[in-house]
Amino acid sequence: MPSVLCDICPRNCKKYRDDNSGDGFCGSGRLPKIARAALHYWEEPPISGDRGSGTVFFSGCSLKCVFCQNYQISAENYGKTVSVERLREIYKELEDKGAHNINLVNPTHYAEAIAKSLENPPNIPVVYNCGGYEKTETLKMLEGKIDIYIPDIKYSDDMLAKKYSKADGYFEIAKAATEEMYRQTGRFAIDENGIMKSGVIIRHLVLPGHLENTFGVIDYVSDTFAPGQILFSLMSQYTPCGQAGKYPEINRRLNLQEYETVREYLENSDIEDGFVQELSSAKEEYIPEFDLEGV
Figure 1 (cartoon, one colour):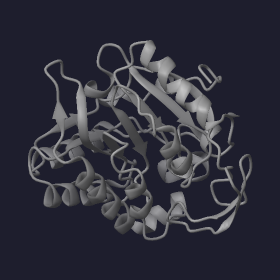
Figure 2 (cartoon, helix red, strand yellow):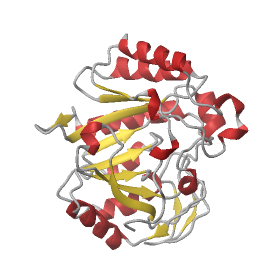
Figure 3 (cartoon, helix red, strand yellow):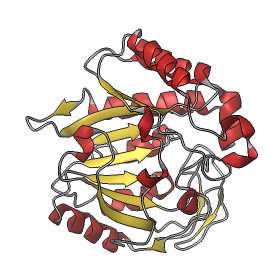
Figure 4 (tube, helix red, strand yellow):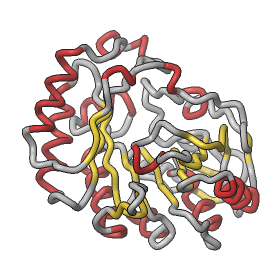
């Protein structure tokens, strides 16, 4: 792929990226760098099913949240660079293993290479699993290639977005991106076996001590999408990882009172379709091993 001054994500770094390296915020080249490609069983039920989701974990990130549970690959950039052709082969290998879908985890900064890799699409749905910090122009480049979008709307409070992810204006960007995702896919569709075929799942990870941030995300989803349009996944799995130890206010798990408060707030909203993660999910053993499996 030719070298560019990159503007693929909302940061608009305009920094140099060649195939294998880059000076931008993500610190990545243009060819995809991958830390793991394997069946994954810990997504929402219609994504994982009983055979697993064919997850491809990309290295580098356009957010680099201080609490990221995948810090080893998102911030430290651990992984192996592969060609677009090899990426296509990985999709086929996961499909042959019985994956319900191809799940592209943290794909934003490789969107151009991913678009090329999907010119000959897999025979199973393709999932774009991201942090919600997306340019609508980039998403439009992927239109028709992505079946399921899973944005994690992390913040309604832009002060938190700036503090923990250095992402000014995050909420407006994430809202516009999510609405573009819905425009592309329409109402969610789940087959007779309970497996999702198309649509949007909006995720939100509850941060300890910042319940108003969660309320703002729930309010947005409730006010914007009608029942039957999207699925909403409230995640309580927050575990201090990465650089969370430098921020005492988030250097802990959720407590039971916080969990019950946000769950009640969701139940009292107009959101009808989705999932609430159990508080017991906040365990480090749910973080996958980044060992280059399947790469």
